[in-house]
Length: 373
Image (tube, rainbow, N blue to C red):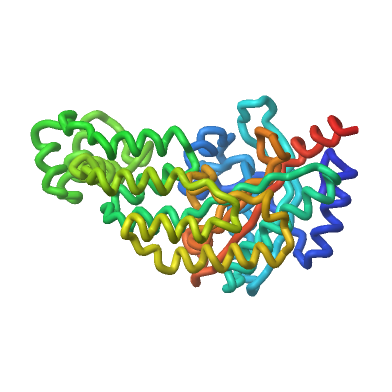
C-alpha cells in the first residue's frame, strides 16, 4: 500500500491490521462494463475510458469496491472475509484534479448484517478519529431498504419503484422523479407503429422494429444500447406515464422523506410514520432497529449520528444502509459507505454474498490536518 500521505498511510495501515483485514491491491486498469452498469450516473460521467489491444473497453480504476469484489470472486476465497485497501483512484472531479487516494474496508460474507453494518460505521469513525484527533465528526445515515419498503407499501408499480430507487442519493434526480409522479407528462412523443407497439407492451415486436430502423440508418446495434434495451426503456416510460399516485400516498411519501432525526429516535419515528400512513414496513424496519442497536453497542456518539430518510449515496449498487461522515459543519464527506448485497452476484458470484464497506478520502483528511496545524 503506497500513498503520497505517508504519515496518514502508516496510521491507517496499522488500524487495518488491528481490525483483522486482508490487505489487497487491485489493478489500476479495470474492465469498464461493471462500472458503467452498476456504479451510478454521477460516477459514470467521470470515468476515464480506454481500450485494450483486443478492443476490450477498460477504465482507470474510479473506486475500489467493484475491483475488490471482482478479485474476491476470481480468487474463490471463503467468507466471511474483510479486505482493506489504500491506493489511487481516477475520476474527473468538479473540485479539480483527476487522481486522488482512497482507503477503506470491504466486509464480505457476514450473514449478521446488523453487526456488519455497525462494524463498518464504527471502523470508518475509528479511522477518522485516529488521523484527525480532536476533530468533531458528524455521521449521516440513510437506508435504501427502508426507502424501497415505503415505495412498495404505497403500492407503486415496479417501474416507478425502480426509477425512484435509482434516484435515491441524487437530490435533483429524486426531485425530478417526484415531480413526474405528481404530474405525469403526456405521452405525445410517439406515433405510428412504434406507439402501437409501446402501448401494447410488445417488447419483441418493438425490438425488431427498432433493429430494422437502425439497420436502414446504417447504425450498428453494438455501437450503443441494444434494440431490446431501447424497447424495454420506451415501454417502461409509457407505463410510468400511466401512473398517478393518490394525494394521500404522495403526501405520505413526502412525509417519509422529511424524516431527519437523531439515530436513537429514528426507529420510533419510522414506526410513528408507518402507523400514521397505514403502512407496514415489515422486515426492513426490523433490520433498521437491529442495526441501530448494534451501532449503539460500538459506543459511537449517539448525538453525532442522524438518520435522514432522504439521504442516499449516488452509487447504484447499494441495497441497505448508506452513510457518510464529515467534519462537524463540514460540507464535503471524509468517508462514505454502505451495504451492497446484490453486487457480487451481479459481478458473477455463483452464490449470494452480502457485503458492506466504506472509503475515506485522504486528500480531504490531509487538508483538514494542515488547517488544524
